[in-house]
Image 1 (cartoon, one colour):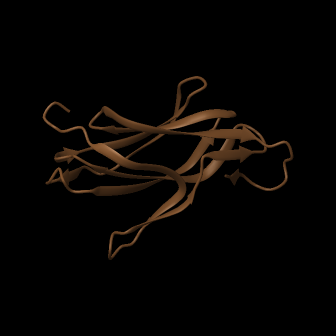
Image 2 (image 1 turned 180 degrees about the vertical axis):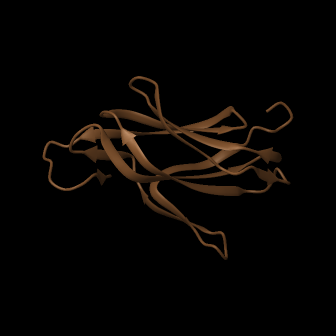
Length: 141
């Protein structure tokens, strides 16, 4: 990103889903969490959302999220937003993205990494833990 400013991230949250109102463009962040529990592995999670808010950006950006299993540095998912043009670096811009059907290969630490035009911006980690009792579906906390 040689000619673009590196955005400053104010908020970066992992959640169940981000709902974007079609009229107001306001985002509803549903079910934030720092831990997932699974009865067995590999484990499939039907959807995860990521919300981020940034400023100090100007120009056209291509944002990409990568989900990495930190225990073995394995990329397990990624998502890309449509290119977005930011006209004023003093603006505050927020984004929400939902990633369907993620497979977690094992318990441990996972991390969402945010990139803008291939340049690393920030990250947010969370834990996936095996439950002792296998009653019910995946739980969050």
